[in-house]
Length: 513
Length: 73
Ligand code: HEM
Image (cartoon, rainbow over all chains, first blue to last red; front, side, top):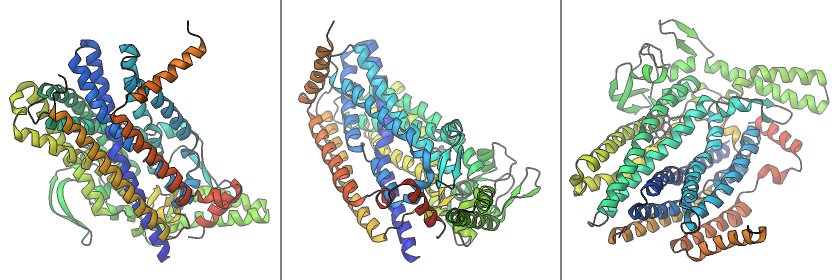
């Protein structure tokens, strides 16, 4: 038991490390490829050399980020097979053919159009080159599609049926999986937040390359393009973020309660802007809150009830009129989960004995109780509560940083269009540069909300982490954790040093001269 | 009209020329090569076996193994 907890903790830590490092590169790739495509479109229409040089400058940074980030995601798949073998068997089709097809398609698209993008300037027509650049931009976003659909399925498992004979989930409704509202919100939130991230990066780097008085025009041109893409991206990010919150309220109310540190909910629930979570006292202290804000955000209804952690455990929901409705309490879910697991044991025994009657009885009991299968692994309802403080702070960091970045993008556009002389001030430059880490923290915080907030589930309500991990030793996971830590540190160091080098080179010369 | 052979030659030349004329690209390709080698030849080979594939011969055995795991925790 002791070792199981250790295996779970180390496997989670390793997965978190890999996912966080992988996500350092992904949103920049998604966003900067779009920014470059827009810049090249301007070059195509104006035929101006300065835009060609500008495009080529950003393409180098894109290439650095892509080269260092590529294949960091594969490690997550290694971890599935070794540390999470029960999980990866059990999820079945979701990681099967669609992911493989997407991988192949992305590979061929990238191999072809990347090559044209980088090698083809003098060899293909400008229109073909431009089309290739756009196809790269579209391709990198599309290659995030299925993995985000798979992630959404784990948060909200629809369109699949559990088959005890195969011990895995079999896809019964492709469209339900692919167009689940959780998946759609997640895909657009992730992709458009990538536009925001890359825009802030381009603006920040523009501040650096203009610092020595050279490249002022190029920097301002870049800020204009990035500013607009960032602003449009931010509007979509906020819109889909709101959509995500509505979905979380509907399908993962426990995550929503953790995001807000809400233990007992109310009709017309407030939305906390800032505060300090006290997990012992089950409260948020020193808070500043918006009246009825959470009810509006989560349900788009100011007088709706938002259940807190204890309400959910007790199985209490309220109507807008204040009437209590009893849903399935966590204690009952545990009972149901244990019944489902007993049915699965009976199923295995009946299989061995070849007892058809017992087999079909077991199957029908599995079906009847499967909805709460995973709760059977718990001994008390508290085990189904995610880490509240971490989820709360991650959510508030994302939203606050999002608010700041919205303002930042508006001000950046205002400066380059209306007050270009301000761009030449040290203050403006430093704000631009220091906003680069803010947007990365914001984006990573988003994933912490999504993933920590759904603990302990690998598949919501069905498979908690302690059942999902393999029978391996904690030691073996620790070893690979540290090996990864070393490799990742080297990759991040390489990314930063090569980029800084290129940017420095850029700031020392007149790039478009 | 180019024959198929000439077309293929053009495509190959396109990549060869491209690689030859790279500057920072060479460094990046080296990083990619080292990284992929470490990932697949060290990590995948020595540290990340696919447990179910390695320990069982067929899907039914794998399914039963997972069933045992999931009903005994
Ligand atoms: C300001 C308003 C925002 C709101 C209301 C919002 C809301 C949310 C919610 C509810 C989730 C969790 C979704 C889930 O668990 O399935 C989420 C995740 C995420 N957020 Fe935000 N967000 C906002 C801004 C941002 C910004 C500005 C960024 C980055 C620039 C960002 C990046 C992310 C990322 C990367 C994820 C993880 C992927 C996902 O689950 O969609 N968010 N956001």
